[in-house]
Image (cartoon, rainbow over all chains, first blue to last red; front, side, top):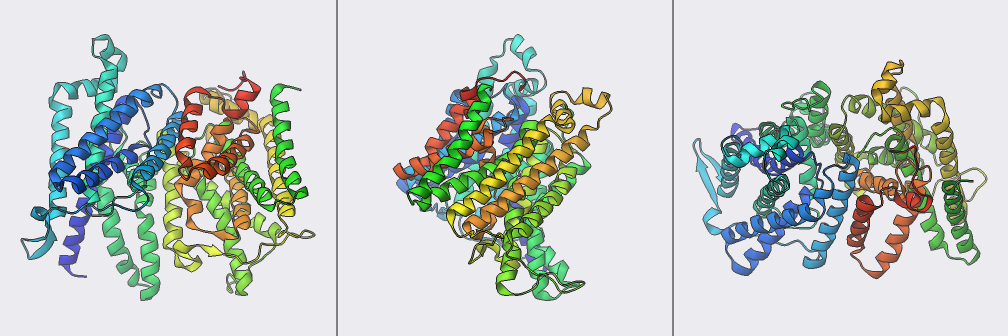
Length: 306
Length: 327
C-alpha cells in the first residue's frame, strides 16, 4: 500500500464524513430541540436526490437541480411537520419510531409509484468533473473535493447560525426550556417547523450531491439514515459539534477500515483468509465503534445530561 | 370471561379455523399464509415480552430472528452436504432434525441476546433504540460479507427439515407444528406475566426507582426479559427459514426489525394476543392490498400512521376496549 493510496482514502473518508454530517445535523437538531426521533429523515434525503435528478434531466443545469433539491426537501419536511410530526412531540419514542417508519413506507412506495423502480442518473456538470492534481502529485476528483468544501462550509455556517443569530439563540433556548421561551413570546410551533424544514433541506442537499456519484433510487436513504444515527449517537444526541466529530470519525473509520483491516490481518493469516476476515470485520467496524463508545460513555462523546 | 379473553379466543379460533378450512377445500397456499402468520406472530410474541412487558424498545430484534434462521441454515446445509461443522476438538455434524435445530436456535439467540442486552441495557431511551439497531446492522453486514454460508446470496435448503412422526412437507402438518410453537409461547407468556418475575418486570417499566428501592435489580430483570424475548424470536427465525427453505441476510435487515415491531403495535403493545392480531392483519393486508396494487406499502403506511396517531391500543385495544393497568 502506497502513501498516495492512503491519502486518497483519507480524502474519501472525509468526503463521506461531511455527507454524513449534513444528514446528522438535521437529525440531531430535531432531536435536541423537539425531542423527536425521526426515521423518515432518509426519505427527505431521497426526495432531494429525486428532485435534483428530475430537474437536472429537464433543465440540464446542475445548480438549478441543487436549488430544486433544497426546495423540494424543505417543502416536504415542512408539510410532514405540519401534518404528522407535530402530533408526535409529546408521545413516547415508540410512537415516534412507528409513525416515522410509516412515513418511510409512504415516501418510498410513493416515489416508486411516481418514478418507477429503475434508478435515475444525475450527471456531474462539466465544470466540476475531471481530476485535479493536489500538492504531492495526488490526482483526486474535483467533484469530491467540492463536496468536502461545501460540507465544511455548511458546517461553519451552521455553527455561526446556532451561536450568533437570533434564530440560533431561539433554537438553543428551545433545547433547554421550551415552556420558558414560549412564555417569552416566541412562536414555538413556527420555530419547530423552521428547524424541521432546515434539517430536511440539509438532508435533501446531501442526497442531491451524493446522487451525482451514486445512482438515484428508492431506498437510497435508509442505509445513510442508519449511519447518520450512528453518528449522532457517537457524538451525543443534540450536539452539532458531536455530529461533526462523529461524522468524520465514522466516515474515516469506514473508509480506512476497509483498506487497513485486510492488510493488518495479512500479517498473521493467509492472504485469502485475511481478505475475507478483514473485510467482514471492516463492514461491522463502525457499529463496533458505536457500541464501544456507548459502553464507555452511554450518552455519547458530547452528550450532556438530559 | 372478559372482552379481551373473548377477542383472544376468537383470534386463536380464526388462526386455527382458516387453515383447516383451506385444508378441507384443498388450498395449500392459504395454509402457507396461515403458517406465515403463526411464525411471524411468534416473533412478535418474543418482542412483546421486551417491548410490552419490559418497556424495552428494541429496534434490533431481527438479529435474533436472523440468528435463528442461520442456526437452521447452517445445521441443515452441513447435513445436506454431509460435511461436519467441525472436526476438532470434537466431531460436530449438521442435522435435519427440527427439535435439535430449535434447541440450537433458542440457545444461540439467547446467548446473543445475553451479550447484546448486557451491553445495550447500560443505556436507555433513544440510545437503547439506536444501540440495538446498531447490533442488528452489525450482524446484517457480517452475514453479507461472510462468504462461508452464502454471503449476500443466502443459503438454500432443498428439503424441509424433519420432525419425528410428522411429514413436514405436508403444509397442514407443518402449520400444526408452527401453531403448536405459537400456542406454547403464548401459554408461557401468560404464565410469565403473572409470575413474580413478570410482576417485578412490569413494575420496573412503570417505576424503576421503586423497584430498586425494594431491593430488586432492574438491570437483571430487564436482561432476563431481553434474553427470553430474543430466544423466542430466534425460534421464530428457525421456523421462518424452514418455511421458506431459504435463509438470507435480509432476515437480519432493519426493515425486518421494523416489521416485527409493526406486528406488535398493530395488534396492541403489551396485549398477550397483540402480535397474533397484528401479524394476521399484516399478512392479510399484504395479500389483499398486494393483489390490488403493487404499491400496497403506501396504504400500509397510512394505516400504520392512523393506528399510531389515533388508535393507540392497536387492533386488540380497539376490539377489547381500554385496559386500566396498561399505561
